[in-house]
Length: 137
Image (cartoon, rainbow, N blue to C red; front, side, top):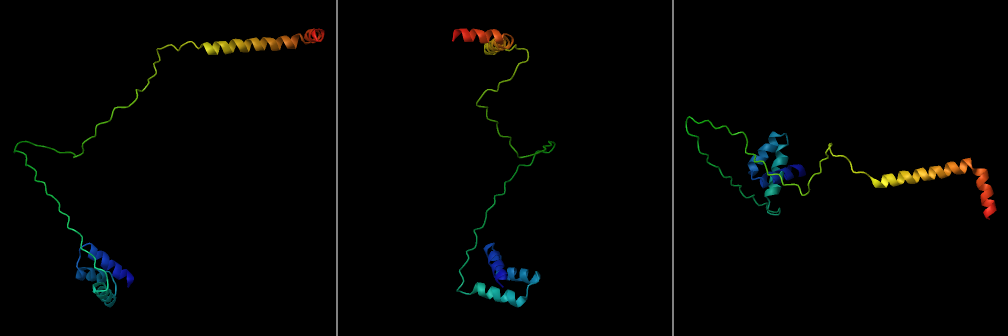
């Protein structure tokens, strides 16, 4: 019963008459007496009044017919929007440019080689270094 009354309210809100809505529910397989009682409850003065929606006015645009002999084929109404220009310049690599010489890398390689030489000296001259350290302290 509640389902029928809600359906009748929705139909009224869409602008259908009560008679059309009732016929629609009866055709859908609902009991005619239930549909009638729901319609009576809906039209009773205790229920709130549902305002009818405003009619939507649609403009019909008249298009000029092309002159005979000219064939115009319109594919789409779509207008492609303009792409905004990027705010930053994209950096493109160039293969023909030689990379800049990296001085930091060269300094690190030299320090590594010096440390490697010190390690080799300690390994090979361990007995001599231990005597030197004892003599100093």
